[in-house]
Image (cartoon, helix red, strand yellow):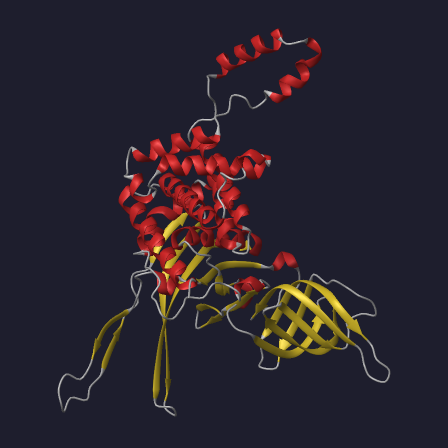
Length: 459
């Protein structure tokens, strides 16, 4: 949802269609707000579904509704205010179990500026005096399809052309869409989880939060058959997520870096992103959380990335100093030599004693990455960086006053946080199968963009 809009109409509950109330649905930064002149019931209610019919003839379904205000004035009349978490414009669903779709097409933020996808092939301008012909050639690029389980996921560019004889103007717009389609209708909750996972993949690629700006759906309930041809009327889907309005906007005086051909990353690595969801989730959720929540305290961002790198090492490198048999023997020797009354306490203290330290985790990860790529070009002075990360983590977690002066603060904290972010991102790309050249390309461009951001923020 990128701009505010309003639908005026009449509204009713599925189990009481006779009681209809006039009002307007506002799609605003605060959410999906239904303002009624009247009320469905005498008391506050939280209906699962509210149905509507707009003044311009559109069917509307509001889902997950709750009443946030109700007033009655004498003289005057009653008013009610509802908020919905989901709105579907173009269809009526009588129950939540009916909310199913064959496909969702999502236009995500940033993709138009961040990819090479374009259908604008050629622009021919008048070359000499007397020539008056202006030609613009447009052809949508190849649709990129990836089969993921029962889903078919497509990345495509759609061209929209508006011609105004009155204004004597032609407006051509390109938009990149990701469409997820199933042979059988799937619940909106299932599809929503999938488009969120794709959103996370794109955020990982772009290096900035990506959000769904437009969602268009196809459902059997909006199907029409004309001349033996099936036509699915589009359903517009709106989510009550105010953060989309606050998504970071690009500054007009510099062009954001281009991540290259997102289509190729999409084709080659999206399937792996889905297949490795469970094993990577504990890592990427901590990493992406620092992007989706820019208002986090610097210390919180730093610690989240430390936890992410620990989670990665625990799952993909190794999580023990000694083989389990040797460690068990060592524990038995230590416990047997300790006073019996302290053994339970000591055993609890030694529960995780076979796990490597943060310093060793960082060192092993860097050594592993360096086997295939020149990590020093992206993270120079690694020993100093590791010392700073370990010292700062120990101070923040253990509140050790002896480490206070040595711990990173201000610009230094921001710097080691960015180095940690780079390391986590390299690890994620590596597990997805990106080549060292691709990783260097993506990380290098993102670091260049961060330098531009820092320079701009100093004005």
